[in-house]
Length: 326
Image (cartoon, rainbow, N blue to C red; front, side, top):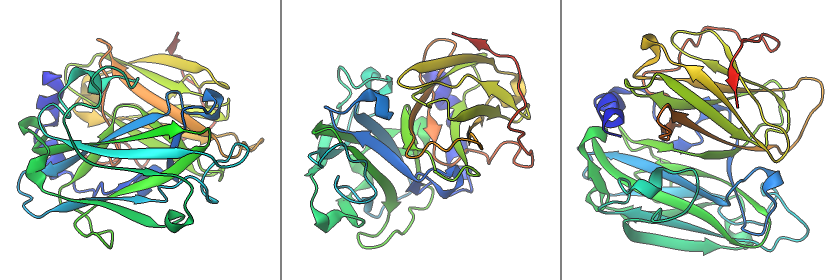
């Protein structure tokens, strides 16, 4: 992890994009998804838990807030299985080890993944009060987080868990300076190690995920779950126009390995999900994570550090390149 920290040092603060809404508009992802613990993995969530990290720059002195859009499970946005019966718990952690504990950077919620100091928690059922509305956590003092010098600030952790029921909760976050409106925290950022999200039903929309590549990486493995053979996954970078990554079917994982060249180090990849133009699959939820050659999880940012790689390239849906698959 030390090499990751060194690679990111200085890049987070000079990033001109504002990573305050999660998912960010640049990602073309409508919502995050967390299913309740009795749900079926075949609906796209492999572990019914999702963890996000928020970086507050060290020069920030004002309190900040984490706002959640549609935190309840019971409205038109959410995914119902039978009658709505689910409860989702959202919890914010700060303090020593909230980020640096080893179990935090795994693709399963196990061990000491709830490390740190619990600062705020609330459980939402199907109350109409929060349907299509924002709920605000905070205020938080920046120094309540875990200071990580290599990231340029204080890190806070948000864990969303489906603690009962079997429905899917679809929601968004916003890192804000205001408790009543979405006012970005200047220099703030957000990332996760495993991303569970809803694909757009618009077949012309391309979803973008941005894993960061530190300078000691020579290869990555891109793993995705339950894509339902809904199209094609491409990788675009500073060095490649397009490289095909293996896509998963229903309720299964698919992994492909990709070599990393020098020009791609200390940059973000653009992992693109292109939906099939012929057969529309609605309400498709997918999980993705990326590891390096040592098996270490790589952070996936809502807005790419250093900008979108090769944003002028036009991706062709039927173009294929050879990858090594497992």
